[in-house]
Image (cartoon, rainbow, N blue to C red):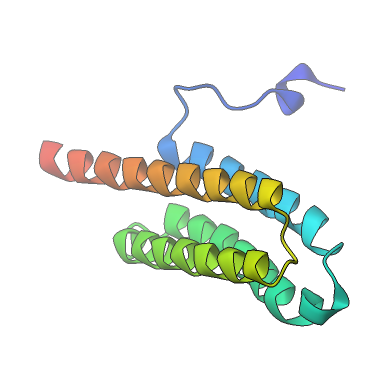
Length: 130
């Protein structure tokens, strides 16, 4: 097994690679936990959250490879993050999402939001340099 494959990207990696890795990690973490939620919310809130997490990863992948639509995609991804925040709070209110999971998820979503903002600032800086 190669050490390069298992090594996380360095801090010098492009912002989009770091955001993509974090979004993928978050989606995997969320998918592992929502399947344990009560049946009463598993096919409503859980399904919506899972779909939003996967949509977020897909949107970020498309943003990476679509330079013309990148800013619009990042705005759309930010909207998905906000929807996920609301759904998590609803799940917590429905006693499906334990407080500890809510806190971890909120921190993860906040970090993703900050990273996407950094990507956006990086893009704005590139546009200003040209």
